[in-house]
Length: 339
Image (cartoon, rainbow, N blue to C red; front, side, top):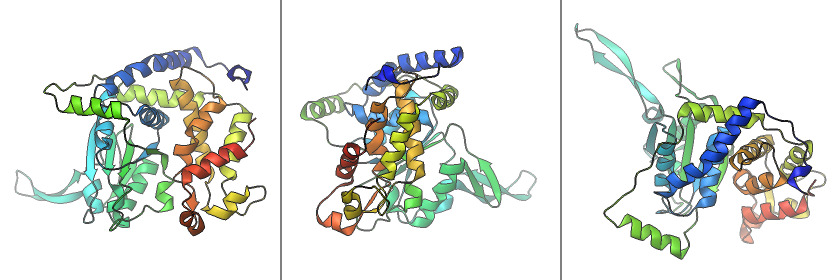
């Protein structure tokens, strides 16, 4: 089915100008990120989708694949304040949100003063989030969902825009605390970072062992980023495309009429409504990044893996047979009929 076959509603002139600006700036973003990060084109694209849609992202990959450097570089390109928090077994919620301390004033009196924690930034890197206990993990829930924190009975708004990008190490699982499904669902995308091809790894080694290190330039401001987030929600989506996204998520839920046999055989829990919402919103943002003011079927299919892979739970039978979530999603994409 061709992209031109979808019925669309024209954007307003001001919105259309924003679309053109974003499409033109995408190449500039990739150039600036490419000064520091070699390869990983798909990973960068998915991160941009998450940021421009206003969602949080989970980055999964082995150590030494530049996850932290990638997040810091993207923050620099967008001129966002950035804090990195290393999650450890002894990390407390107050280490993230901040706490009140007793300080002495110039007049000799004492008063409680709130010292803000690292969560008060535009972009937070929660490094190895699965290495801290659930109590501390839960401290992120209010911040991720409501963009605010509550300390000592007071509610404080976080800087806008606000993003949480968390990393997980898929190896050395001993002593870790797997994220509960409720918190996993708060992440719009689960972006998997894999090893580089040989030529790209040679480029990384050559670049990082030289005396000259490149610096990136700012492309957007935080205010412009918020404007693009508003525009992304205005991108029209045909009912056929939205229905395909909903059916794709519904087909992952075992025990429901019409789901494929392999779902009932391998899946313990399927994707919920938030998955459908993020799939459509992400598709809208991806369309903008590719210079289109409407959503195509390819936009939805391209984001199926990062949107669904952390929302579908395998059962013991699937794990015993060596089935992966990505394999299940690939089969779902073939099972659900295209519009």
